[in-house]
Each structure stands twice: as C-alpha cells, then as structure tokens.
Length: 401
Image (cartoon, rainbow, N blue to C red; front, top):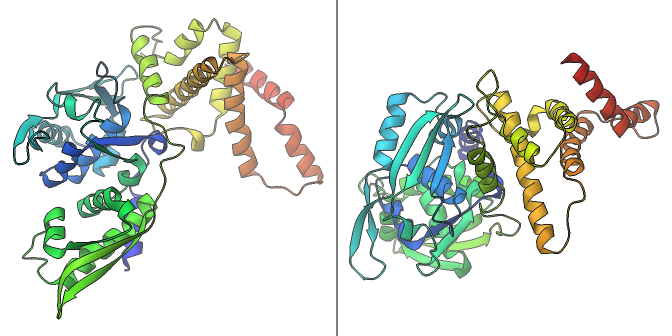
C-alpha cells in the first residue's frame, strides 16, 4: 500500500470541525516551543483550536467550549470514554516549559489551562469548557511584541502524525526563505525522533520525511521539495525548497461569527426552554429583533428544509440545525455591523436571513438535479425553485405541524 493511499484512508476517518475553514491560529513564539514538550498531537490540536477560537485582543473572554463530538474527532475516537477524556484533560493542564522571552537561557514552567468543566449543555449534549490561566495570558493575548506565527487551523486539523505537524510549523515559519538547509541532527532533534531507531537515513526518509511531505500537501495545500546533503556517502543535512503555500487572504480570526455565536448562547442561556429542555437561542435573538411569530415560523419552516449537507457538525440533527441558524444570525450581525461602519444598513433583517436559507436550499436542489436547459423537465425544475414554490412548500410544512 502506497504512502498516499494510507494518508487518504487516515484522513477519511477524521471529520471536519465546525467553522474550521475560516479560523486562523495566532501562536506566540514562546508557545511554538511546545512542539518540544510531551504534548501529544491531539493535545497540540486542542491548543490550536483554542487559539483559533479566542479573540486574541479580548482577555475578558478566555473560555472556549468544545462539543464532545469535536473532541472525538480530534482524538480519532468514535466515542470517547469518560476515563480517557479525564486523562487527556489532566495531562493538558500540567505545567509546560516556556522559554523566557526576556532572557536567552531562562525559562518558565506554567500551566496553560486552569479550568476544564465537563458538563451537559442546554441541548443535553456533553461539552468541555477550557479556560486559560492568568499566567498563560501573556502568551495568548496581545502577543504582537512577542512575535507570532499565523496559519489556517484547517491546515493542521486533519494531520495524523505529530512529526507531520511539527515539520509543517517549521516549514511554515521558514517559507519565505525559499531554500535553506538544516543539519540532519538538528532536524531529528526538532522532530523529537528516536535517533537510535532512525540512525539510518533510509528509515528516517521513508517513515517520516516522505510521509510528512505527502500529508502536508494534502492537509495544508503546502508543497515543497527536500534533498539530502551528503559528506561522502553519509547524509548530514537536508535542503528544503518551498514551491507553493496557501495565502492567508479571505480568512477570518475569531472576532466575527464564532464569537458572535458564543455571545448569542451566553446571552440567552437561561431563557426559552421548551418541553424537551432544548434552548433554541436563535428564536430568542429573533424575538429581540422584533420578528413576528409568523416570520419566525416561516424561518423555522425553511430551516427544516435545509439539506443535511449544508449543516455544521452537531451531536444530533436538531443540534446541527440550531447551530446552522445561529451561524446565519451571526453572519447577519457581522454584515450589519460592517455596513454600519460604512454608513449603510441592511434594509430587512428578515428578508436577509430568509435569502441565506433559501440560497442553501435552492443550491442543494440544483446540485442534486441536473436537467438539460430548454426541456420541459428544466422548466418544471425552475418552477420548483422559484419563490412561489418556496411559499407553497412552507404552507404545506405548517399544515403538518
């Protein structure tokens, strides 16, 4: 079995985390040294998700909530057992060694997280809330003076090897050099390889370098070449040459939609509980917008029609649909704020939200059905996707309630 096939099979087992495409990790230089710690790949990923979801200029909000399904995706577990989760969290909250940014040889030992709350959320789903320590704040918030590395969260979230993760960060940090060299001993030390086990270059090359190159290309869309440097017949170093890498344009830090979703949840945490104990936060927000019951009902009917392929990951379909609607409301708020800054406004919040849902419904219908233009089938399909059809379907949906 080839390296590429193995990687594809491994990546197929890992589901995408909610909203990961739009998140950027901002990791301070001192925290980059954690690749030399005994943190596992999964623990390093949890830290990256945490850094991707916080607002690095807002110390007042230093808690991040992970849904149980998200942690299972990170850990590669179908269903994580409580004792395993407890063990992982316990290790994550141990002290780590951080280089002192004010001294050349000094260091500090600090705990990154002080609180890990495991509980059921208002939907009855298990979640973990992580909060960083006060001593860790200087390495997480307002880190411009420390220097930092920025990269897309989606670049690392599907990586299967700790070697790949560390090598990617090393390459990303040096990408603008174009071509450079590193001694083989230093590279092995960087990757924390067992130097005795990988004493022969052919094993190090086959099991680490080749696999990492393929996985980095697939997971991060980052392409590079490497060439062994020899003294006589002995490989003593590696020359790296970066060919292409994804730009950070058109990606967002968490200051936008994700923070807004958390604000929606927190602001309504104790209101509007239905008979099943499910808090439909989005309805509370729409009530605050002075939406009528009829308009909320119309949006609820549309929400039920959104295909599953358009929904974010959730512990249940109901959870996914609620998260989907909160994402759309968060987008409405973000766009409304942007327009306000520019001196404009959204004319109708209701019709803006409605258009977002209808777009996903119609686009999904178009993808499922491909018919030749100019035929009766095409005319029928067009009729089914116009506004009259949408209104008719919503009326039918309401009649079934």
